[in-house]
Image (tube, rainbow, N blue to C red; front, side, top):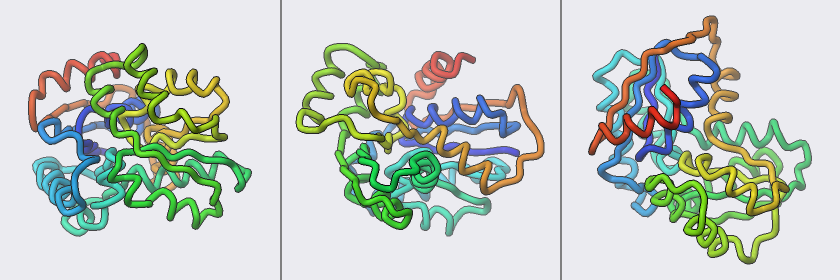
Length: 247
């Protein structure tokens, strides 16, 4: 099994980490569109175009599956990407909704959904969660977290100030959906801010759960081949991958 993982930048490495932990694939091809990050402030037509261009990039490889690790692209461009792809394309939004439904047994649970402005404006999580019977939802566009993570700031004064800026009127919810693959990198700091009262649901774990439900994995791969590509400064992406993935 050979998979392509697409993200707007480096955040999708959190999905790669989960894939490695569960040993699902023999080869992982990662592409980060680092030249044009962040996607979360861009319009729908632009996001769709970028998503289709990512599919064209992956056509250079003989893939069995493409994972769209970017929530913004998953929310806006998945249908269009599937139309031009020769292999299945799955996104983290649908996986996150499945994980939430499987994890939370109380349909009245207070759920806070975090994401970029484009993801939140799409209402993709809200629509999907309503279908599952969850209506006690809050949403918050927290796009500043993306450049903070891109700068490898995972704790400290800058992050704490950003938490206060976004969450000063929000009490600890029952669960928080990390609707951007960058956000798991600040999950520990986020949990501490809410006094560890909130369950965190993030894309990496969710996508593994979704994959195991939808596909029949017959073999484990202890040491998959990894390749990392970026639209700008690929060496920087590879260096970050070495640190995050411990490879």
